[in-house]
Length: 129
Image (cartoon, rainbow, N blue to C red; front, side, top):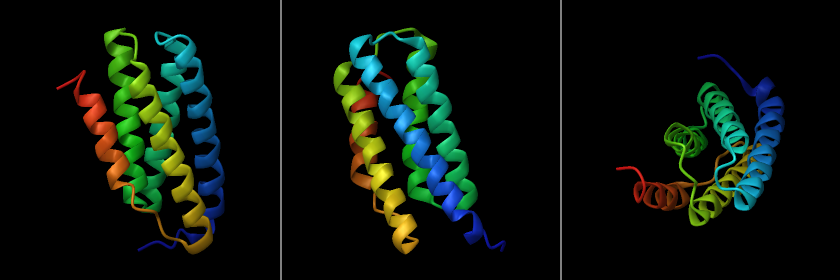
């Protein structure tokens, strides 16, 4: 197994930047739920977090960011307006990732994000089964 601990600081920093970008895009979506640029930014940022988390071995962060990616991708593909409650749950999920990143930085351990992942999955499944 390869020791990736030297990359932890860079991972936390870049993932945090992607999270901030997603939160800004969520704010834009609250103003215009059909903003394709905001959805595209969420998709790309969440994909980047998911990929980096997978490489670093942070499985819960990978799964939650993958769910955010899935939400953005499907609303982009359908061209539908994303509902405000789903935008809010997505922002809540991003805040959970930020909290987990702080834990990773401090004690090298993810937070349990299972409950917010379920909440996001439930909110998403109302629109895509």
